[in-house]
Image (cartoon, rainbow, N blue to C red):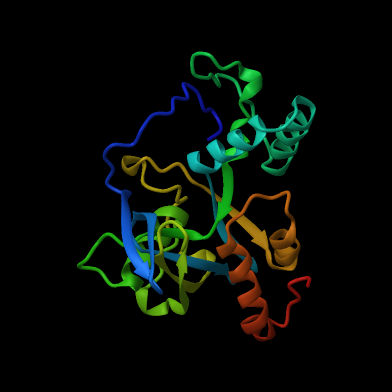
Length: 244
């Protein structure tokens, strides 16, 4: 996962996932404009394994996160940047960085380790299949990414919300799914034909809130929110502490 090389950055002139626009409007008599991206809505799923009493997350390399980390490190004094790189490596359980290369004009010392772009996330996917319900799309993502075969009818809708409101405003709908080892039909890992390379990660229930609030571990807001939701709504059912 962390064998990242031949990094090149260029303009995005065409994409199946993002479309940039500029909207002009008047608000309370003042003329304004705003740049935004048109993107797909999405679904995410908090998966709880009742056999192992653990949450099932996914871990993957996110180029956008990596490049933001690179931009942040570039602005720091050399000594501070070195410490940031070390911290990123420790937080993401680094593996060997052999083969990592950079664009022309950049030395390897200027790039953070690939682990700086690795994040822990809920199982999730784009809403890009108009013939399927949100529950059916979520079910497919759970099967492809995490290897659990769960009927769509067993998915519990938690809530929906807007994400990236300053840039995209797309809507994400979050579901909850209980699985057992009996539901596991594959190792998961995502769909290689779609460029996915995903590692399935299990977080023990009693370590969940410590994990959620550990700022050294790169994670999405969805992970934090869903763990809090589980603590408030589902923990009494299992009578097990989430270590809050």
